[in-house]
Structures are given as structure tokens and as C-alpha cells.
Image (cartoon, rainbow, N blue to C red):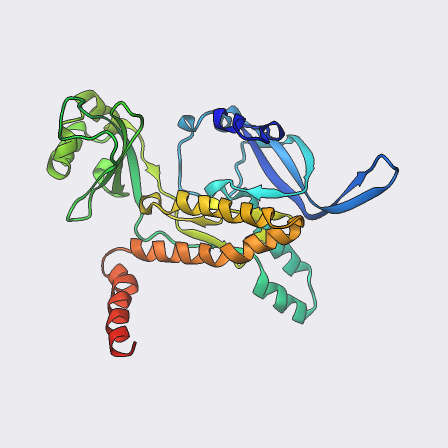
Length: 341
């Protein structure tokens, strides 16, 4: 809210928490009456805004992340809702993909109601869809609060810390939470690991830290270890991307995680979302035609979304599969580029 108030157009923005936006018509028309008695019309999007229960309207700390099912949340009440018309709908609803799912369903409905074979073929090749990969290297995570010793020369409070075990069992990353040495650590484990379960054994968790992460074990007291062992795991999102375009109708675009979802430990999720925002802003600033700006953004970013997710997924593939699909092609490319540059 503080950052929002610093924007020159902050008075045009209203923050609402605990609501779900559901598109009703991607190809609506908005008519505006003018003081001189004339009227004008332009493309618009009609959406229903539904109030959700307090279970999901609260802060992020009250929401336990589960594996995404790409389904709408039943806790949002369509009877406690209202319909609005907007000239531009920008969907940045993350892995919940409410808008992307509606776009996919909209194109599926068009295919069902089209009887002309040639038109069906054309619609099928251009139909919007979300490519959903099965996660063959699923990991869960538990958050680990850390406090760096202020008097120690061995620890700097302005760095990110990361560690990986040789066996691949443990991945640990810690990022600064403030400038006072408080850190938020993330312990990544395979789903079937005993320490990945809720109410795991605190002594065994301590042994895991001593064996794989001894430099961090000394920073955790027994109470913190017990809290980590007790807490349920959270799940990383699966790899997914939307395509072959990132828009629906003339005035709806998707960006960020709902357009391209990667696992956060590659450092690509937030950066690519910011790049989406930059590209969309640039497209809008270069023209007075929002419809043209929407298409420009979609044309520029749709291929990037697909490439980002496919590359990140190949990096994440386990063992020999990852070697065959990512490392080996790089080696062969390097060899043949020297033989036939």
C-alpha cells in the first residue's frame, strides 16, 4: 500500500483482498454516452467479482499451499458477487490460473459449437490451452527461520546462502528477511523423504542438518527444530505454460505465473514476470489502441513463455533423464559446432 501510494495514478487503483474474478464475456462491447448527446463504443471484458470466505481472504500465512489442480476454489460465493465491465483485463493471478482456465474453456466451447470442418481445423490449431507437465522430480519445502550471529565475521547479512548435498537429498536456500540478520530459509526435500512429512522426528531432523547442513545447524535452537519438524510441507508448483497466445479477445492478457510457471529455485519466476510487465507497459505506451497493444504483447511474450518453462523443466529432470534431455544435447551441440561452425 505504501508503494502504491507513491505512484502518480494511485487514486485510480483500488486494492481488494479475498475476491475472485471470473470472466463472463471476453468480447463484450462498452458504450459510453457523452455530454453532447453522442455515444461511442469500444471493446471490453465483462467479469464477475465474487467474495470469498475468510479462509482464503486472510493473509498468505493462513493459506496452506497444496499441489495446484487448476480448479476454481469452491470457497468463493458466486451469489455474493457483482458484474463489472473493464476496458483492459490483466490477469496476474499466479498458479490459480482463474483467467487462463476460463480462456481455455472459452476456446473449448467454441470448438464444440463449430460444425464447419475447415473452421474447426483452424480453431483447433489456434486454440488457447495450458500445457501441464507431470512433475517427475517433485519436491516439497519447509521454511526455516534463521538469525545470523551479529558479532561473527563468518556471516554477512547482505548475502543469499545456498547449499546442495552431493546425493541430491537436500537443497537449502536462505535469503535476507531484513537488515538485522533475520533470514528466511527454505529446506527442499523429495516428497517421500521422512523429514518432508508433518510431525517428523525432531532428533532425526537435527541429524539431517548436522550431516548435510552443519553450518546452518548451529544457528537453529531446539525449539526451532521442533517447529520445523512439526509443520506440514508446502508444495512447489508444477511446470506449465499457456499458449499459443497470451491473450483472449481484444482486451485480455495474462502474465507472470499464470502464463509461465516454473519452480522458484531457478530464479526465473519473478524476473520473467517483471519482464512481462515491462513489455506490456512498453506496448501500451507506444499506441493509443489497447487492442493493438494486447496483441503486440502476446506476440512478443508467448514464445518466451514456452521456452522459459521447457528450459527450466529440462534443468529439473532427475538423473539420467535430465542428462539425456539437457546436458547431452549441450555437449553434442558444442562438438558439432566446432566440426561444422
